[in-house]
Length: 271
Image 1: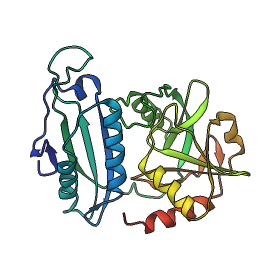
Image 2 (image 1 turned 90 degrees about the horizontal axis):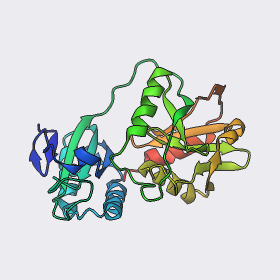
Image 3 (image 1 turned 135 degrees about the vertical axis):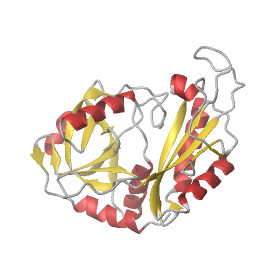
């Protein structure tokens, strides 16, 4: 249990009345760590604090949480740290919190995923599972991930590396576990996430890197039909980094200029 802390103590279980388990009432972060250091930790903690404020979860252990993340990351050359903060153990039945809960924080360390073996194409298809639109939860990495669970099941069944998720109005939003960027004749675009989707830390890093190098990225709604005109695509998350897409919905993509340029900048960033 040296790789897991619950409220600062080595443990491997939580109370069955915790609202994170009962209702998905909480948030999580997945943090890439290299050479014993959590990367972009400030961005992760900023997003977490923003989400907690949006959910009205009173959390005053930010300094302890930061120390726990740093502690677990410090002993490994490369790993992933997962952070979960819930509203805490329910003090009464029902959806409505009493306001007397004490948040639960969970910090766990996980080995960096081993290489899958022989390199293969990164194949992406359009998912049959739609994302629900909700401005209330848009952008947040909340614990309600059933749509992504179903999408990943489809991904495995179709032997794809990732699937693109759409809204009910057939707007492209993201991958099931990633954000997505497309290159067209007019330049680089990425979906607007004001209705749904997660504002990924790596998406933020890529957008900042692009701006610093003078590369314009248009953030706007992207209709499914626009994929036919895409000449390059890449997905982003803290584990994959900037991952070029080789095959998009039955069509090979040969371009990777934007991805390679941005990957070099991201890989050079030690924060």
